[in-house]
Amino acid sequence: MTCGIWIAVCFPIAFAIILQYLYNKEDQTSLSLVARMAEGSESNPDSRIEEYKKMNKSAFILGYTGEVGKVLLEEVLKGGTFSRVVAIGRRKVEYKDEIYKNLEQEIVDFDKLEDHAKVFEGIDVGFCCLGTTRGKAGVEGFKRVDYDYVVNSGKMAKAGGCKHFHLVSSQGADKNSFFLYPKTKGLAEEALTNMSFDRLSIYRPGVLMCNRQESRPGEAIFRALVTPIHKAFPGAMSTSTLTAAKAMINCTVLPKDKSVEIFENKAIHRLAGERK
Ligand SMILES: NC(=O)c1ccc[n+]([C@@H]2O[C@H](COP(=O)([O-])OP(=O)(O)OC[C@H]3O[C@@H](n4cnc5c(N)ncnc54)[C@H](OP(=O)(O)O)[C@@H]3O)[C@@H](O)[C@H]2O)c1
Image 1 (cartoon, rainbow, N blue to C red):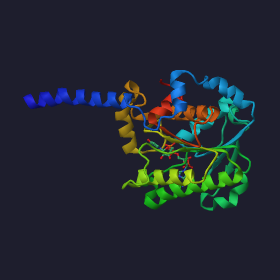
Image 2 (spheres, rainbow, N blue to C red):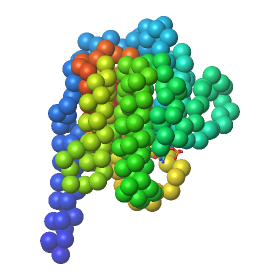
Image 3 (tube, rainbow, N blue to C red):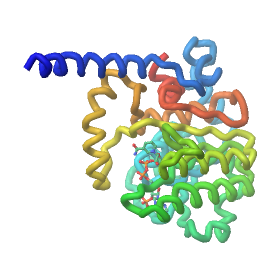
């Protein structure tokens, strides 16, 4: 009985201490770009966005029907960040809202992406939000989407003249991992890094907070458990899809630190302007 009371008291306290630690711990990959934003020496991204718009840049979004991709698409169209936006995917979406009226949609076969080289030609900035799960696609299917499709898209983008490629990867991405998910993400990051884009921005969000339409029961339960933590300690272990989208847009308009930038979960929140 006494032991039970101790566990009931100590466990939440220990958990809260761990969360506080995660919340305050600095990302090892935090960049000076993020640090400059935190200290206020980097100018407000909103004014940078206005300057950027005048440059009439074009962008493509891969995975625009997914949770991150659709929010990103909506944000770039609402904000008018680019003069041309091309959504590249495997299926056409009918949009009713006015903001989508100038959106170009290109339907491609990701297994024969080289047949669609023209789609990528002359587009300045690329956002890759592609991904699937092992549960949905199986091991080989997961590798095909999260590695082959991502890397082949990078190759087509580079050949087409893309200068800045953004990749939504994942927290824990590690090419040497024993586990399929982080290993595949790490290998995709490495392959894109080796392509030598003028600028490659890699985002490693924690749990994605969103209202997912697709049924993923395990992920939904986990997200429900993480929700109070997300509210109390934003950036400790989760990122909303809107935060991820804002971070990608701000990164686009802010000057680069180096050719390959990696934004861990907390840096994504900072880049989005949501915490110091
Ligand atoms: N879920 C998380 O908590 C979490 C955490 C960290 C990182 N991430 C990563 O973040 C990225 C974005 O996640 P998300 O939740 O936004 O993804 P999502 O909602 O599952 O969307 C994935 C996108 O990829 C496309 N796609 C999937 N399989 C495809 C296939 N076989 N052929 C062509 N396109 C395909 C989907 O198109 P359709 O709509 O046509 O299927 C959709 O546009 C992913 O790489 C994911 O691994 C996720």
